[in-house]
Length: 461
Image: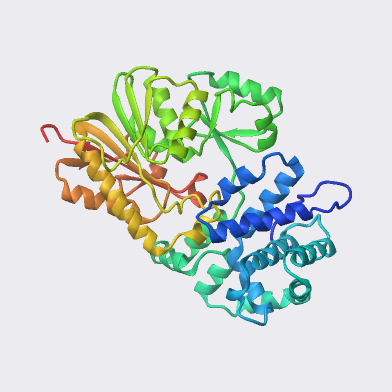
């Protein structure tokens, strides 16, 4: 049941083997995402420990697939369920969603096996009545799938985009107002693709040529970024992971977009630099690398668990001159003064939806406004502890103008002592928007959606 979509041969084993335990875990993870303040990437990391690789791949594929296509899956199911679909038990929904996802997108598992195990799970979790309901809905889906293709053509443009690309209607509407239908369609297509993972070479431990020779000798398939040669995409990532180059500190898993704010900040040996909201530490590590063991790098974050990850990453990469502190970055003592500041602001995350597949269901339009207020507070705090003639970079991993250029322009208007700097001499033109801003989009730049701006505090202010 391909329907023009790429199908993924997840199960490579010669015969189908029951994966009822794996399917039960899929449903449990999806239900935790729906009912708790839990994120799928963290849940997968925790729940997949001690499982066989084939089960890890299967569970990851289905969990992420359901979350990518949830609105579309629900649209199908809503028309097949005779009652009020919204009132259906959450884990029954997730049993149905994960089954329909497999029926559409996975071509190595027979339909009869998917239906059988969905029914068995429903029977074990609830009762025969629920099992009969699941069985009836899935069989009707198989019979009526072609009808849904016709019904899709009857939708208006906004509903069709929302359904076809499984993005919330309110978000599609916002984006169309900014960029138009054609751009939004391309953006949504990329958001729904499985991400191509990138890594950054730790050039303080290994030079590029030696690193590339290591990859070549182990037949790792990679592509070096055409402009930022310390970043590269890895295609056969599991083979790469098995080399343990990450644990050796030679690389960090890090999108190319994360290098742009550090390029603007231009860290140098001997400087005193503040990294606000630093965890998990990708940008922090690159700053430390460029400081070359000289100066002071203070990395702040208020979440202890995230700071532990940051410390572990910096230790693994063998950087030395940093200090990591658990602290609220909106409450930095004014007696501290820094040469340069990176504000890696908390944001809606709408630039990384291919990797953070559950964010589009967890965020609301009000969240964007709430983020904006926090971001402006961080800018105000940074301004108070930056030295005269110092530089600060404001950056996010979102594409929302309210969180990006509108924030920076509002701050600049309220703080005439700060100069917003043009970027043409510093960054390749294709990443620059309106002279003053870095703005990247996944469908245009082969990297995450991101934003950055560079401000200088004028002398004597």
